Length: 120
Image 1 (cartoon, rainbow, N blue to C red):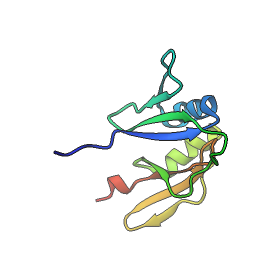
Image 2 (tube, rainbow, N blue to C red):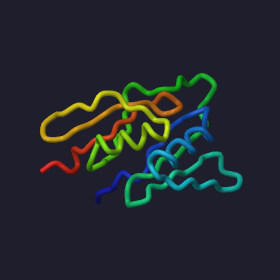
Image 3 (tube, rainbow, N blue to C red):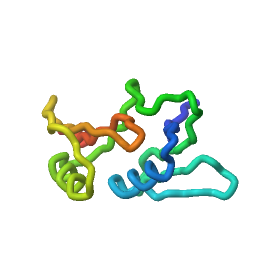
Image 4 (spheres, helix red, strand yellow):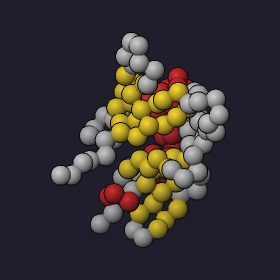
């Protein structure tokens, strides 16, 4: 019996900022349910959902062991639009027939846009 990965929990003390960030820059829909402290962010396509969970007081923001990677066909075009909307990505790197660029979200988690999924 196989299981598919469908959600990723991101612990944050900045739930509203994070929801706005992922909705604005990556097109996620923000779903809030009464009496639920977790905010669900759903991708416009069949991509993975992000669950924003309030972090505990002793949890440090900004994972260094996890990076959220978003598939985009044209990294440069995406980065240009993102910059116009207030999100700066670093240098665009070329590797093995694809490109990628890195940034951080409001809770200092590493994020990346990559064309790896579209390489031939």
